[in-house]
Length: 171
Image (tube, rainbow, N blue to C red):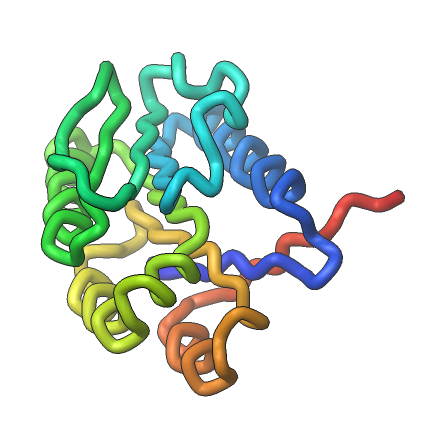
């Protein structure tokens, strides 16, 4: 299923990371795999405390001008080209299907990809991949609506089964 995580106006990057950590910990206790994908290092491995050491957690960075591949055990670098991103998502889905273990893919700051690669291409990627997601596999896109013109935000929002609001920490 496709979900959108939408930070509230008061939410900070710290709140977003806290949500990802909480979701990942719940997944670990529910025996669900989690792949955390960071675009342009908007979050880094060190933000995720010791979660990266868990066998059911993968971490990937989408960065500019790299050769896509593994850079360590369960750690990957993906070139910021649509084909590279698409292939990586397909490999994750195939692996999860083969192992019969549920999977959450959390793509942090999908907005950055929309801005850098274009809303039309990213929309095509999501709609092309959407049929691969089902009850045992989720794609969670972090989108910052205020960084997009309204119709771009609405276009992606209409694809989502649910929009999850990430609230800011209470002070």
